[in-house]
Image 1 (cartoon, rainbow, N blue to C red):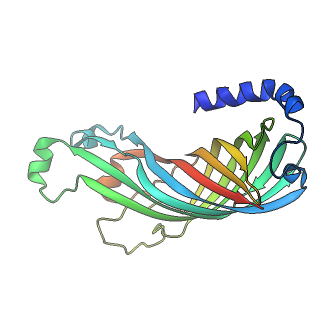
Image 2 (image 1 turned 45 degrees about the horizontal axis):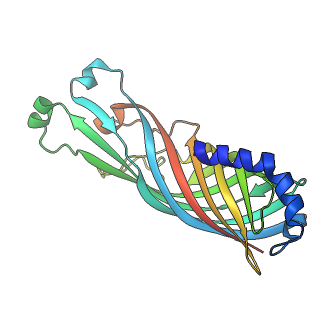
Length: 239
């Protein structure tokens, strides 16, 4: 990510000279002058939890640690893009994100022997409706390529959350707060084809609020904080 951002900064610094040399070469030369255009983005995700291990000494005697690793998912969004000026655009990307996130428990060996039904791995499934709002900074165009940076925030609602299901007794489910706020940063490149603008994009989002819903199970009490982190690889088509 750092290398890509540094490359984009160099591209922006020297792009004016390159633009002067290229003239009007390339496809869809007036596309970025449109005040408003629309598109669609589909892609893959990699998601996990950033976990804060409990500070309770009694629980630490039962579980030695918790961990979460990236798990694959999918997302699809509709794009509304408003041109602010030559370099900046305001983008709304309402969509759906389907993700699974895993939690692994490292039980203290003696505690595990006396509790043989303990699980070492749990999966939390989520279906998010997401409403992101982002600023897109575009570098100078070079032939049919134009790199960019994005940054912004989003409101997310987990439709599969069982936070309000007080009678749930299925031990394999960990409940999460349904509402989540995130901020994101990303990098990408627009590729101007003959009839549409195609883009490749990578974005990382970080959860702001704690998703944990405490109950009487050791699986949730062994965690003092739970925030999401998601890497998104997107393929965008705009017309």
